[in-house]
Length: 213
Image (tube, rainbow, N blue to C red; front, side):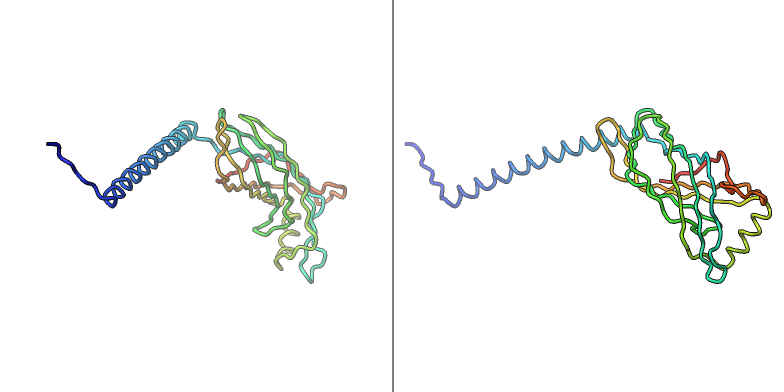
């Protein structure tokens, strides 16, 4: 005599639900494993290549204008031409520069408006020439600015800072990283000739810069 077993519709529904849940769990586990492995590979490549920071150097700075339009209101007019070199020291990593803002400073005060440089891609160990013409039109400065600049010019030298703020992305093979902020600081000792009457009023040639990411 054969044994007949009866299964209620409710029991079948529970069993089917368990199978669906198991398939979802397996699918989720498969995708999780795949993406975790992919991220691990990218991370290992990153650790292996370990991209170095880009290098900048200020090769020339020509000061055409640097004076107060009014000593009473402490408003500054300025015009400075900068020439820089940018170097990618990495052998296997490219750099996308998405944003570059440059301005000049004197004794902690911004003395020009920000100038935007066009974005560009820098290949492995490539060196690029960058130029920027910075201007300031009646920029407010501290009351002590006039005294300080006159004293420094009389001494024959003025310390000018070049600041750059930007965003970059690393390119490793076909992989492109997210955006990273970076800052460049250059300090230049500019020689001033009190008897100089033609443009430029002062210039420097060659100074290193520091880069922070």
